[in-house]
Length: 256
Ligand SMILES: *[C@@H]1O[C@H](CO)[C@@H](O)[C@H](O)[C@H]1NC(C)=O
Ligand SMILES: *[C@@H]1O[C@H](CO)[C@@H](O)[C@H](O)[C@H]1NC(C)=O
Ligand SMILES: *[C@@H]1O[C@H](CO)[C@@H](O)[C@H](O)[C@H]1NC(C)=O
Image (cartoon, rainbow, N blue to C red; front, side):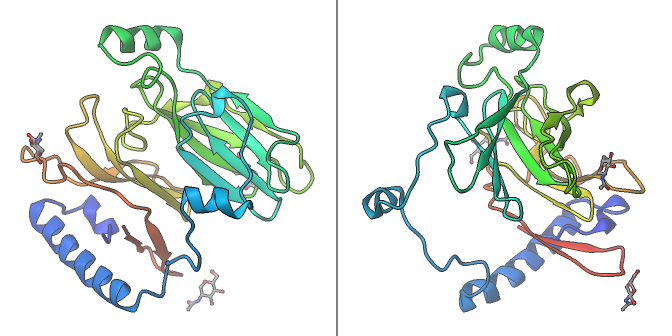
């Protein structure tokens, strides 16, 4: 789906239909050619095991429930967002020199989550769902925060400070409209030109799904698709988006 900046001014159902039409037009040629964005090799989990080329991450139980990854090929590292933790792994050997930062949801929030009848293990924790490169030294990250999403910066160091691995916990901000409340709800996001675009549910009950834009260098306010009583994005599945920033213009195209 192409999410354009015009959404800020206009919006509404008609525009969404227009965008959906664009989506179909965009997807059809891509599916027909089957060239772009299609991996050259695809292995199932079973095939990976059989090939003997897979390496299991044996970090710890904290690595369970991981839902976000960020590859830093240049520095040979992999960031892994998991339950209450972000891991930094070495690509050459996932099980050597494992580093991690802890980012749990507040105890109060966890209690409220349990009182609301949610599962203590599977839902009432901070599941990291957003990990994007922001600039040379910072990664932007968000977690579900036991149904109160939060976002902040993770400092990973530039060339001089290879060793930095520090989470700015105290300056965390609300992650609503950037990250889902529910760790298992479909969700997608991309960070481009220092704007974060997300397709996410926007409330505790997960009824309203929206496409949003946030962050950015100049205007740090949100834009989002309209709220509709018809929930026209009900049941949405959100595969990975692809961003195509247009150089020297104020428009970015996103294809989801
Ligand atoms: C990256 O962004 C962070 C947060 O805005 C900022 O503090 C930092 O100076 C930036 N680093 C570079 C290399 O631009
Ligand atoms: C979403 O769609 C499902 C069926 O696909 C329906 O049962 C449900 O009521 C819908 N939810 C809302 C909030 O409209
Ligand atoms: C785009 O911007 C860059 C730097 O701001 C400039 O060097 C370049 O000439 C511009 N290109 C066009 C097509 O305007």
